[in-house]
Length: 476
Image (cartoon, rainbow, N blue to C red):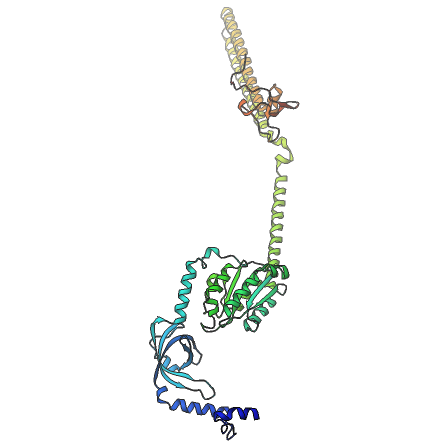
């Protein structure tokens, strides 16, 4: 204490060190609040800057942050004034705010009590920088959809690049464990906000892709890079060119999970997949074990039903085929021809009998008439004519019978011609390929030295072609 007193004595602070009155925090806050509220310069002023945060609560009041390149200040607009706005400000827009500086009763910070807000056409500093960086990286092809890869369906090991203190990390780990506890999670700590955040993120991504990590813990199947929500300046590290470049060059399929669903950073375009939130990233990357088991059970049931249905159809088909007469008795195939032959024979026999009966009846009539036509000579002449008629009738009968017999033998020959082995019995043979059993009909199908099978009536000969004569006319 003596050292401190001697130090401040030359500065004239000796009297100030005396504890004349000790203020409470509330007294200090009330004093500053009264001073600011009574300052005419701070009441009814215009403030120009960029909207970096804008949130309308359920009460209808809007809370926002306005900033420039170096500083920022919070603000509030009550719902009555918010309804009167011509245009609602958006994050990143450059605006002019008219209002008064005030200090909340229970707070130690000052803010703008906004009366009206006028949106300007120009974008703010951060959004201009964001657009410039986006155009530059897009020209390099880092956002090309063709270079994006599909995420693995069943990852075994997941890497997460984020802050160890982030609530988003705890949420992602919790979701991953709930969905599938068997998947390994490797965390790569990194700063996610501030001036040192970009280089920290780049080093963490490069470390995740390094051979040393692959040898130590195994190859990563997917890498999540992200953090929780915040203002555009809070998330700016994920808009830095070096960070976006590192995400694009990652050998591991990457997921960008930065901020809330409405937040968009440049790593979202460079990553293979953009998740609206870190929690959504964990849900996308980690398969749900219960859901997989349910799908497996469903597939197993469907497969069993399909197999049984297939077996039942095959069994019914087998029964249907086994009941066919052609398979039970192959000779049934000849039954139609046999029946046709029998029908033809019966018709021929009937026709012959009919003709014979008719001619016999005619002969009897002529004999009866002849008996009535007596003299002897006339009778002799008619006897001679009757003999000739009888011979002609007999000759016709024999000829007609022979024609019918030939027709029958013709049908029998046709029936025998349908039997392929009958051709072989007549001295013919089939020449075919021993491998494919394809029948050769032309000499052009053969080459010298080629093996072939000669199928004859009583067996098969294996032959080798010594000479090929491509002449359609046989030698005499």
